[in-house]
Image 1 (tube, rainbow, N blue to C red):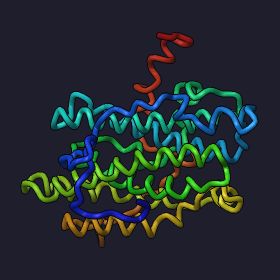
Image 2 (cartoon, one colour):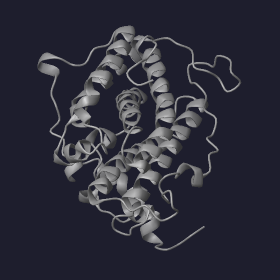
Image 3 (cartoon, rainbow, N blue to C red):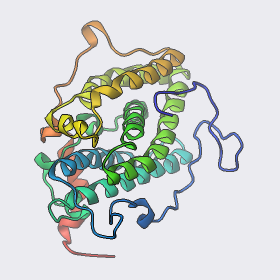
Length: 300
């Protein structure tokens, strides 16, 4: 599916027939032990320990997934349709699964658990890109952010499934199947909003303009990914941009949308990979971490 999208195509339903524009929103019943295949033990049964570079890379990807999951979870009971409560909730659950796998692996380098990394790091220690921490806004803004995020993640995980790191390859091989659905869901809503009422189209145009400044950071190379890519562990983000652009161009052409240009176009400076964040991440982390920090060590 990497780099390809068929505009207007039907989404396969759970019974093999054609579903509506929302796609299949059934709950993924995969057990966590299966989800962490390749993470907990290697071929001879011993624990897999990430190198410091691989751990930092996995943390970046895990933080992207967890922050986006937290954002989407906020739509539950607030989405424009009951079915969207279910759809967005299930997308968030998929992303939490990706985050758990990636943060578990990242934590092996320092002896920290996935919960340690999720609940006991402060804002400067997080490595997510700025796109993922942008506020939900109205539904069009959430869809524009989700379109960009999922189109990027499809290309990333499709390439990362060939990683020389068995753990990252295993996580990516599972994740790519899920983010492919996430992308289709976002595409269908983009088309629906852009082709709907005058008001829904206006909001979608504004949402694209507000989201687009955060795209470039996703595809920025740095020393870490260059080192890992040289060993076949990571994927150079810049290498993913052409396929991403091809998909977005197709969707925008069908929706009669365009990225901002001229005086309305700008690029956010970014810095999330280095622990520099916008004002939006702090409140999000406060809500994410409040229970664990109020009751450390509690279980239920």
